[in-house]
Length: 75
Image 1: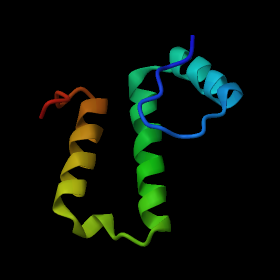
Image 2: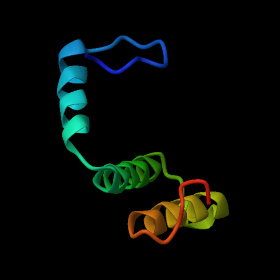
Image 3: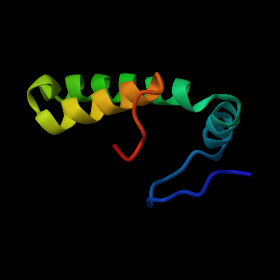
């Protein structure tokens, strides 16, 4: 079963199925690591120096601490 699409976009059902299968097999820490890599990559592409934006730096830090069990997601 495909995940629910939350925004109105032209979707690729075949690709979504592949992503959903990977998502089901992957643990939350690995997904968090991948998500941070993607976020940093996209911010670099759009030329945003995320190192100078305190909210982004703090958000990334909490995520990284959560990955090693030193923070809760609502921190």
